[in-house]
Length: 106
Image (cartoon, rainbow, N blue to C red; front, side, top):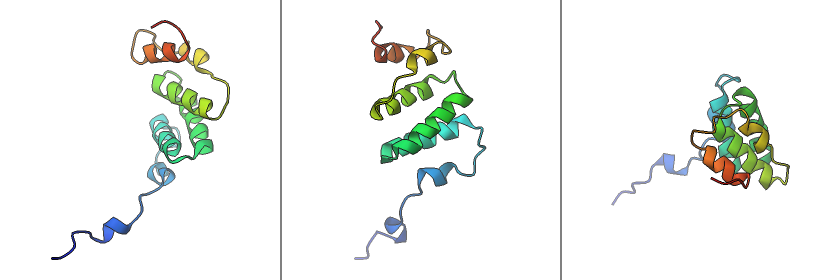
């Protein structure tokens, strides 16, 4: 019986940088997505840099602020989440998660 594994099974996945390299450098979603991938593969410095950039480009993105806080905590850096919440709508999701991370009541 012939093997069902073709040549694609031995290739490696593209790096997070390769995935978003050709996108607009001011596209916050690209920085956010690549940064989370970098965080997942253990490239913490790249993740931090990208999440900072995503947060600069779109300061009202609650998810970028949360992931930046997660990356900061993993790096033993101070949280900037309290400052970020000032620009985010507190009535929409994930504001409750942000309050949880800040130790506030939900």
